[in-house]
Image 1: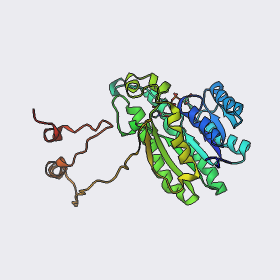
Image 2: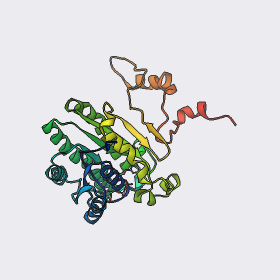
Image 3: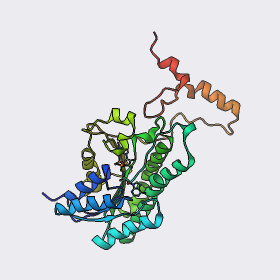
Image 4: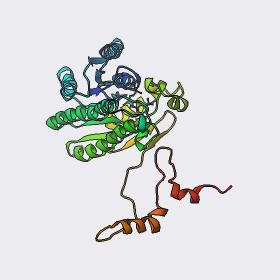
Length: 295
Ligand SMILES: NC(=O)c1ccc[n+]([C@@H]2O[C@H](COP(=O)([O-])OP(=O)(O)OC[C@H]3O[C@@H](n4cnc5c(N)ncnc54)[C@H](O)[C@@H]3O)[C@@H](O)[C@H]2O)c1
């Protein structure tokens, strides 16, 4: 059988450990030449060495995706070493937990620089090259279920929501150059999970990164032709799509919305249409009397 990624050249960012390492190893096993990027250079080299030791093709890159020039360099490395770039897995990421009133601007900025600008810089570099060659390609951004909203994860959730929005927007733009853009929301036992008691409860050790890799490989491959703009979640045993945000009916019309009219709209119409919010689907207080079971 033809290997899923035969003759393809792929960049995986943050591939020195955890999910990125699994994506790089599986991509190489499926026949891809891989640029193994991680800001932790020795870890990137170790992953690349493992691939080569098993007969695969890989080069390490110690660039930081948070720096636009360095991100350009990751894609240049792929083109220089392998003559092309067919796929990008935008995986590098940071995470921390903090209640909003305990959060810190410097820490939030560092996270946004990696999780949002890192995806943007590397994605733009790859899309420029794919546009230049006209040879098509596939991008898989790593988002998170946290993008739906989670407690004590405001900055992280916002960064992953931005990744989802980038995915939808790039998918719209890139179809005309034959590039598919999808996102994966994984759950796997990695360093990111070890650092969080809550995540550890939801993610036992048998939920290994290798269980997510087949989904990423599929989305990178030509087998996924015609699939773009999708957010796909896999937590090990479960695989499902995440619904698209949309403009919700009813859409009320007035020439001008003064505050009194807005209040009436909420009292008379929207009150019954409020949405449960966050990944946990918390019911807004005004709706609770209708949804809570009577004692
Ligand atoms: N583990 C999970 O359950 C989970 C859930 C949802 C989303 N994710 C996402 O999956 C991705 C991988 O997470 P993981 O769990 O493997 O985490 P991890 O911490 O094990 O690995 C992340 C890797 O990214 C690298 N990195 C950090 N900053 C970088 C930079 N500026 N440039 C290049 N590399 C950089 C780190 O050195 C590290 O090796 C992240 O985007 C994360 O947000 C993970």
